[in-house]
Every structure is written in C-alpha cells, then in structure tokens.
Image (cartoon, rainbow, N blue to C red):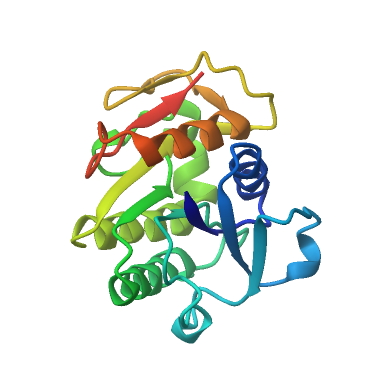
Length: 210
C-alpha cells in the first residue's frame, strides 16, 4: 500500500516506518526535522512540515491508501493542543484528499479505558505529571470520533523499547485497574500495520498490551 506516516521521528514512528518498508509498503513521512530521520530507502519519501500548519500537507497526501499517526511530544507539564489541533489538520487534509483510512495511537487511560493503566498512572502519573498531555489526547480522540473517516484509535499500555514478539493482547477490554501493563513500540507498530488489511476495529478503540 501507499501509506502516509505522521510522527516518524519518534521512537514508535521510526519503528512504524521500518516495519512498513520491510513489508514493501510505499511510505511518505511528514516530519518537522528531516535530519532526525536517518532511515534511507527507495520506497521512503520524507516531507518537511508541521502538523499545526495545514499547508504542510498540501497535495503530499494525495493518492495514499491510509494515514498512520504516531504523533506525540514531550511538553508534559504545560498545556498544549499539539495533538488535538494537529489531528484536526490531519483529518481536514484527509477529507480534502479523499483518504478514508486513519489509524492513530493515543493511550490507555482515556475515555472508556480510564483507570486501565493501573494505579500508579491513575493516582500519580496522569494527575500530577501527564495531566495536560492526557487532556490533549482526550480532545484528540473526540475529534477523531466526530469525523466521518474509517478510523481506528489504538490505545497502548506503557511503551517500552522491547522487540517485536507477536504474542501481545489486543481488544476493547485490555488493560488493568491495578497493575501497569507494558507493550513494546515494535508490537504497537506491528498492530497498526495489520489494521491496513483488517476491518475488525474500524471506528473502535482497541487497547494493546503484552
């Protein structure tokens, strides 16, 4: 397929690009700083842009089969709208370019998966460290919910740099109220790419953990 990846310079995004290329997909990656993406491949096109600038997409999204977003940031302790406003622009560009399939990472602990990142995240990390980040993720999900795209929101547990294991769990009831469940970025990328040919979770929000 011809896929458009956003957030490709992050750890999950890089894994997503590498696995997509291994599967012989044609990949376009929109990144703020192309110098941070060291992956070289004839099937990879790197576009410099910013998701907060709708003009960054221009016609580069035209002709793609799907958009995959691993958008994130590290501005945890101040309020930002990077995720929600960026996603709004992604959806606007997709509608303009008639791209229907959207696969996006958020996190367990949001909306109907609230508390499912375990007690440590529920009682400490989210309210005291990641409050604004999760608030923005919540707004991001609502924007996706209200779109007319064929979307899938993937909610991972705590991300790790482990290898792809293929033995992970996924579904609408994944997570734990007490213990924090982990998942490798490699497995998240694998699961995202599998959604390209699987309609099981269209307009649904599966969680994913080891």
